[in-house]
Length: 190
Image (cartoon, rainbow, N blue to C red; front, side):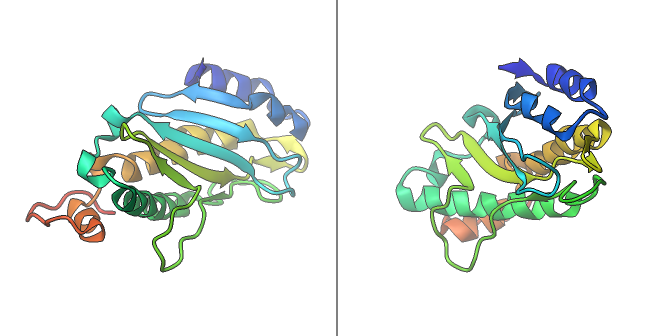
């Protein structure tokens, strides 16, 4: 696994090159509080967006075991985190500029039903992985490194901090969704 500093260096090294230069960024990168994985890179700025994921270690995510102790609790938590991450990511979508789908940031849409989805996974140790799509920025069909750096080093980490860490979430909303006893303390906004 590479460091986030290596990712930034690699991104800046391909600035203004042809869009296929992004393909070399596939891999896993360690950030301060999460691991960013670039799983699939789109072929050009007008193609289906790139597939990425953020993984937060269970100790850092900090969710009490009550939230993922059985299948129903775990699926409910996954659904809630998917919705929270989508809500946190939405204001950043298309803030990075460019042609085609440049700047797109999105996670799977959740309907009314609470279902197990592939967009978010909570493992037995409380680790959280959320999968999402990103439109890597381009000027025409060339790499726009500065805009991708904004997306991966500002927008995605901020959304992850807001939505994937227990200490940052609105605990009453999470408890209500999970059918756990609600206490009087409120924290967080999502």
